[in-house]
Length: 393
Image 1 (cartoon, rainbow, N blue to C red):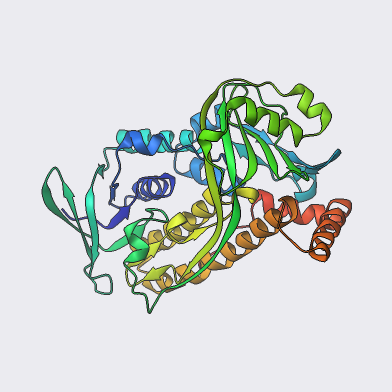
Image 2: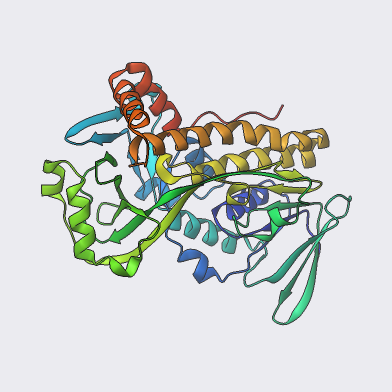
C-alpha cells in the first residue's frame, strides 16, 4: 500500500490531521494499535480553545459540537471562601472557550473518517518506522497475522506518550525535558448536573479541586491526591465528602451527588521532547509533549501542532514549499513552551505543595497579586483561551 502521509495513531490528533488533509485532497492512511472501541472509551478533558474550535469547523466536523457544546465566557478561581471570576471574554476582547468532551470530539472525527472512505487500520500491531531520513520512508505493521508495508512521503507521529514514533528518533538526536509531580488528580464522572455553569478551580489547605462538566447533565470532578493513593480505596461517598470540604460553603451546599460512571487517578507531569521532527517524521500531541491538566492545554496543544503540520504539508503539496518542513519543530515549540509555563504556573499556584515556609508565602502572594491585578487576570485569560497560532511563513 502507498500513500502521501502515514498517520500513526487514531486519537483526536491523528483523526483531525487526517480529516484536514483529506479535505485538501492529500491522501493519508491512519494506523492505530488499539480497537476503535478502546479509543472511544478513553475519558479525557473537554475544554477547547477558540483555535481548536475553528480547526474542527475547517475540518467540516463541527455540526454536533456547535449544537451541543457549551461556550464559556469565564471561570472561577476559589481560594478558601474567596471567589474570583476570570471574565475571559472581557479580558481578551471577545475570546471564549468551548466545553465539549474529548470523547465526543473523537466520535465526530471517527464518523467523518468513516463517511469519507479514507483508510484507517485499527488493531495494527508491531508498528515500525523505517528510513525516516530518506526520500522514501515506510511503515510496517501486522494485521490479522500478516506483515504489511505502507510506503509514504511523510510520517505523522500522533501515537501518544507511549507510542513508537518518538522512540524511532535516535537517542543522540532527541532531548527530553521532564518534571513529574508528587501528586495526581482523582477524577469522578457522574450523571449529575454541574455545581456551576462555569468551571471552578479551588485552592484549599486540603488540596486542589476542580469542578468541570461534559454537558448540562454530566459532570466531571477532580481532587488532588498523593500518588500513593489507590482508586479502590475511594468510595463514591468518600470522594463527594472530600470534594465538598474543598469548595466554598455555598457551592458545597448546591453540589448534586450520584453514583460514579468512572473513577481514575491521573498523574501530573510536564514533558517536552526536542526536536519534534526527524527526517520525514513529525511528532504531534502527546508523542512530543505532556502538560499538567491544570491549564486545560493538553488537547489544545495537540491541535496547534496539527494546525502547523497541516499548514506546512498543504503548502508542500500545493506549492512545492519543502523548505517549510524544517520550520515545523521550531514553530511548534515556541507555543508549547509558553503553554508548559502556563500549566506549571497554574499548577504551582493552586495545588498543595511540600514547600518550605518562605516559598509557600511567596506562592500565596503571587496568587493574591494575580487575582487582584487587572494585568494578572488578563494574563490568565489570554493563556486560558489560547495564544495565537504561529504562521509558518
